[in-house]
Image (cartoon, rainbow, N blue to C red; front, top):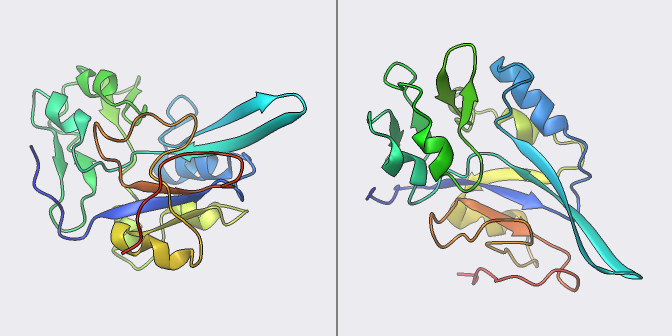
Length: 198
C-alpha cells in the first residue's frame, strides 16, 4: 500500500470538447520517441443509446497515476514507484525485467511493452516538462482544449459551474485503483457518479 501523495497531480478530460483527433497520442509518441508500436496515450470512441437517440464520446486516456497503482503492486522488481510530492507513478527502466506483470494488472492499459528493449514503459506525466513550468505535451497539443491537468483537488477550479465526474461510459471502475483523472461530460446524456465539490 502506498502513502497518499502530498499533492496528487491528475488529468481532466472534457469529453464535450474531445473530437477524437489523436493529436495527443501522436504528440506523446513523437515527444517520447516511443515509435508507432508503443502508445502511452490511447484514444477510443464510445456510443450509447439506440436510434434515434444515439450519443458518442471520445476518451483520451494515459497512465492515471492512481492513488493505489495496480502496476506498482504487481511489479516483482520494485521498478515502479509513486512520488510522494505529486503522486506521479514512474518506472525505473534500469530495474524493469520486462516480465509484463504490470501490463496485466493495469485496468487502463497504461504500461506498454517496448519490443526493441523487451522492457515496459508508460506515461510519466511529462515530469521533465512540468519541472520547467511547461504542461504535458498531450495537454499542450490538444486542439480542442479538452485535456487539462493540475492538482487533483484543484481541477474543479478549471471548470467553474460544471460538475466533475470520476467515471464515464467506457472507463473501468475507479474504485479499485482510484485513478487521478476526472471527466467533464454532457450531463443530460451520460449518467455517472459525481465528485462532490469542496
